[in-house]
Length: 438
Figure 1 (cartoon, rainbow, N blue to C red):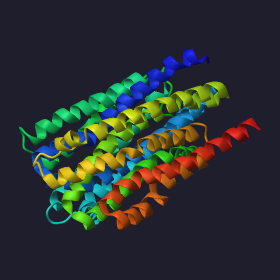
Figure 2: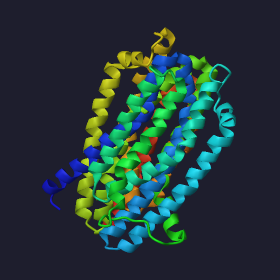
Figure 3: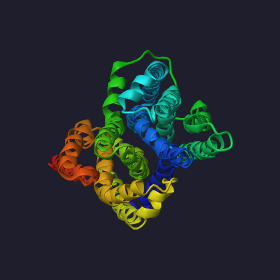
Figure 4: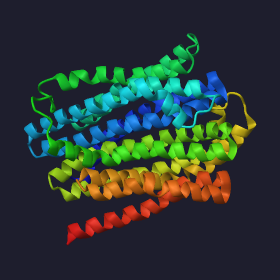
């Protein structure tokens, strides 16, 4: 495929994927905005303590969706339609199992979880309410993630994007209706969020029910090999989200010890802006993934490298633009979420925005290269990159830098970790290229 022909296809897939992921990030961002306006600093702190549960649910959905859909793309490109349908069916089996587990946690253990996440008396009830309802809606979140990945990889990125955008738009509208005219408080916020993936699933249903489409449920018992492949290829996506949740828990605990609930609320602002920025990079990676997997399945090395280079170029340009926005507009961005005009929250958030997002370029590179490794079925380097950036480095760095420099150290933990991981990822990539050439 010539670069001039590859560019329109790359643009179509990545642009639609970015729009879809941006819309998905608005699930929590909309909650953050309306909760901050309706419930103030305490509501913002409660929401930030509960958000890690969303990371775990969303991470599971992405693991199953990305892992299954990646293998699905490779099978389809090789003409193995029967195996492709078995991959989809086994992915659905796994989705049911994880949905039941999360649902039971929400039903039986939400109060224990709220305490474990650090909710004190001032924010416990709000945190518990958000957690319980969010977990009860976990089946919708998981199946929505799975279908989004399969529909996009089945050559219909437009529908995948439309489902996400419509779900997110409904979340914003319902957030306002439930929290202000109906005065349902934080329950209204999480109810709106839970209904959004239900709407997305309904929009995508016609695609996968049509017999002429590329994936269907087939009669088969759960198969160990497809399940293993799904876990292996999807694990980096799971780890990225789970580690994000774990990092939020660790950061919340450190910040509570340093400056209390106001600091946690300020971190909530930064964490939610980060969610939007990471969603852009994830959109680039998920958009180019079907193209990378297809060209890998066809053994077309030249086109594979062309698509990867396009992804890298877009990542670099957007990283610069996004950092300039957060640097120049840190004060008004923080003020959007500071309905009480709390000067301490404003000061902490502004300082954090300017330091935390120096990480942009490295984060974008790490997300894209990890997806590349997954797309060409090189699970080990993808796992190593994800583990390093998600758990192995960032948590000890958080404790070390916060003990040395307080809140400044907290904000610098993320960029320092991503920089180190980028260096490791470059080494992996160069080694793979050398091996392929030799």
